[in-house]
Image (cartoon, rainbow, N blue to C red; front, side, top):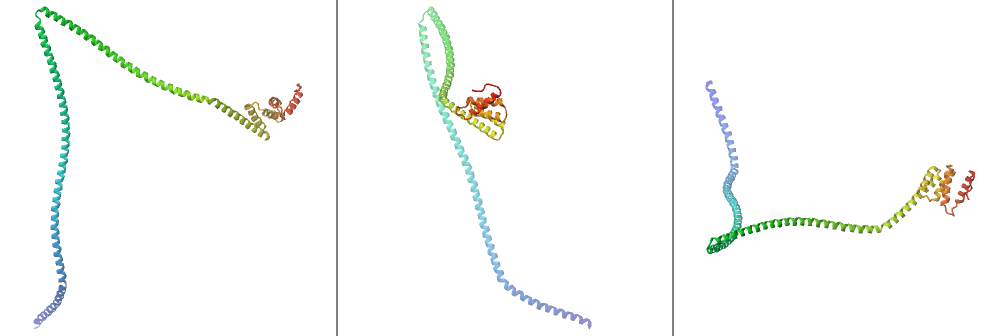
Length: 337
């Protein structure tokens, strides 16, 4: 009994579980159906849009294929046009070359025509000469026919030989004359060259003479101003000497006042060197030698020079005379009158 009880229980459990599962899945199925019903319109819309997109893609693909065909046709036409252009350029170059060849041919044709005309002219001249020779031949033949004996023929032959000698002689003389003419031409050319050289030298000499004359005129004009320039230079030199001597004189006075007697003497000596007739430069030298440097000989020398150069109204003349008189009396010399 217990053995059958357990399977029955299991069967019951299984039936219950199946029923419960069926109920659960039935509920879930209903939920899925509701969700599916809600999604279906959107899905249909997306399907329609997908179909439209596929149709548009197919149309675009077809249009693109047509564009590719058009592009290939355009490329083929462009390539053909490029070939035609290259061929046209080649034809243009060939035409230009042909025109050049035609120009050269026409030029050669003209030259050929001119050459043919010149040949015809030469042929005409040769024919004329030939006619002249035939006439001369007939004339000689007729002349020979008239000769009946050998003596006359010999005489004629002798005359011909003499004429040939005379001809040769004349040709020799003509040749010599031609040589002389050529020598004269050469001499003439040398003389012309010498003439040109002399003309150039004469032209140069003329230019030199003209330049010398102009220079001489300028020098004459400058020489007219030379006396005035020398006078101005002399005046400036005199003024310079005077200014220089006054500068040294003033320096001598300055050094004397500062009791720098050696330097004062040097300055007054420069004044005497520049202007030997400056009386007071000698006076100042005599005074410094007499009163400060105690050189009586130098003092007397410059005082005597002062008396020679001094003017009659100078106030220091009497003092210098007394000084000289005193020292000459002291030395036993004759007093100065």
